[in-house]
Image (cartoon, rainbow, N blue to C red):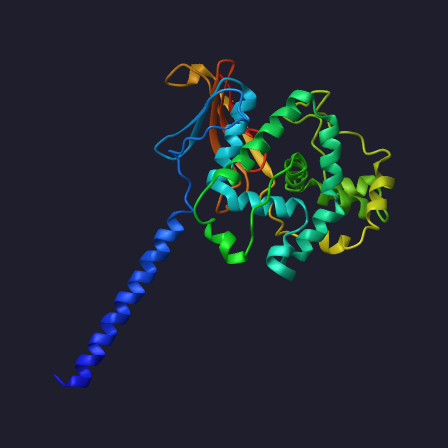
Length: 323
């Protein structure tokens, strides 16, 4: 073997060793961004001890003496597992995605600011009971506690986009409720109806947007009955003058606009099941995402036991059951 060939082999081996070392060092560094599920903290924000136990699927089971502390634990767990999702959801609800992604998300930010999520959040907070507002605040405190006490590198997405997580506020969480409301897709249909009312009669529009039949298999309680259309047209038509309306009503890639706007819920009587107990099932038709919109969790205490799924960024359970 020639001397030159030997030198090339040695050089190649050295390069492989250096690259391998860099890859391993990068792996060890990024591993520090993972949450420490065994971490023990002494926090002045808590009234009593809170314990978060992860099962084999890493689903958090949060045990607390009261519901306020349980929601603190839920906020902490959300931040542990979905810190980047929390950051993106907050940016979306504030109409500030373009600060991260540039011009590509401008239509999304225009929509959020046009429908004025800040006003919706303010009105929601004004109507909340003191107890509900306390639970929201404790949830926010849990998110901030994790941000304060975490160690190691931030999740890779933060490093990639040069984003630093900042403290959450009560208003941030309330704005996410407004954002989720966009996912119902109903607002787009209402604006389209309003535009049609300038040219078509109600009867003609009803052939395109038929109402639920009064003799249908499912009856509505008085509280949930469809509201009459009288008086709605004028206020809806005024919305047609909003800037960017045409492109907003055609926008389909908003983070929380549902792909299939429907949901099914049903109950099977115990007389038809093997256990003799009734079965309750719910099938939300949402878009497939990674990470998912929903987050599984279990809150348990002396006076409550809640299991189900909710949205990251909000202390609520959209689907689930109590004791």
